[in-house]
Amino acid sequence: MSDRGALHRVPAALLLLTALLLLTALLLPGGPALARMAAARVPTILISVDGFRPDYLDRGITPVLSRLARDGATGPMRPSFPSKTFPNHWTLVTGLRPDRHGIVANVMEDARRPDEQFTMASDDPFWWNEAEPIWVAAERAGVRTATMFWPGSNVGWGGTKPAARYAPVEGGTRPADWVQFNQAVTGTQRVNAVLDWLRRPAAIRPGFITLYFDTVDTAGHEFGPVDPRTDAAIAALDRDIGLLIDGLARLRVRANLVIVADHGMAATSSDRLIVLDDIVDPALYRLVEAGPYASFVPAPGREAALEAALFAPHPHMQCWRKGEMPVRFGYGRHPRVPPYLCLADSGWTIVRKPPATGWTGGAHGYAPDTPDMAALFIGHGPAFRRGVTLPGFDNVAVYPLLGRLLGLDAKKDLDADATAFSGALRRP
View 1 (cartoon, helix red, strand yellow):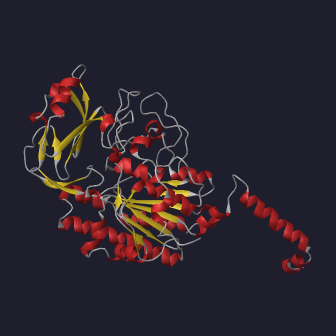
View 2 (cartoon, rainbow, N blue to C red):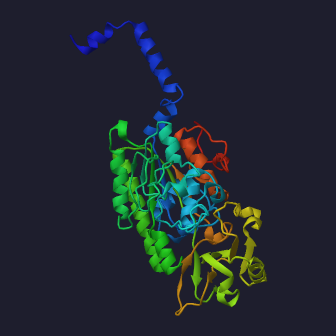
View 3 (cartoon, rainbow, N blue to C red):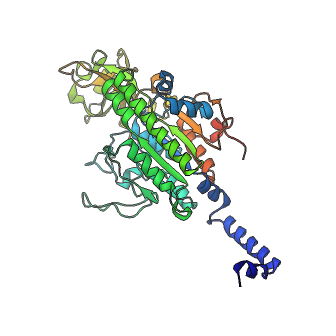
């Protein structure tokens, strides 16, 4: 007897009951809701091009990205302060500003760990556990996730680290698939890994993927944002994005692409320096960071003398106590922010001593509303309308956009919602 003949013998009422039970299971709290199934059919790929300014699209060397921008939604995005890599990557996937999610700098300290310092190699959950990243929320909602590099994605979120130094991190939640960052992995290899994930059977195919590129930022730092060698890095990155687009077409995968940068890049040189040794006695402070901004811990009992030196008028630099920074920065209240911070004008660099030789290059970390710090945003795919130019918006809006694309329950404690994209999204 054929299976088809057996199916005809099943009462229609039983088939209807089975369908209703299946639908109920899909919609039960904690189960894989229909929106999660849609996310699996139309995956969302979050792509970070570190240090990519929106005006890089105007140089005539990005045919792929420029086409995606024309055919989707694009606009300048303001980074959060400080306009550094790790704080802003964590903002993009948590929906919170650094002052709330705890990754307040690329280098930072915490009074609870007086003998430690956070660097961009730190994977101890202690530093990361103050805000839940979107891959944890997605996994909990039944959307499988995969990260081809993203700051913090190698950390077991919610895990703990034993007291012994260099002991392995224990527990915590990571994406279902993740890759430890290695700068030697080429852009082509990163793209191919993403495409391999999308070739999987539906049961283990990710519905949310991150993809990270660092070469444009590296070139911008070394050569400056306006240099033929930086242009070459931009063009090479565009070709890598083209490989992804071609691969998706071959796989017949319709994906929503959210292409972002963490910050922009400003031209710097040894001709535009603010030398701390010419301003303040080194005995008055301990320097935590320097560059586009500098942060200080005062020597015991020397607060008044340090303030007198820092708060005097200085060309191209302004200084504040941590709790008195301009409101527009949304920064300066987290315990990990040092007691004093000085910010340089865009293109100027705060150093402790003058360099032995001259140099030119690029940097970021300046005020978020500085034009050179503007970051790329492109939304492209079936969820986005064509030809939309967005007014400037803050990057905290990206998380609620991702949540909407993935069908996640809206969070109420975020620093923004998705209204910045209301004119860019198609109706469900």
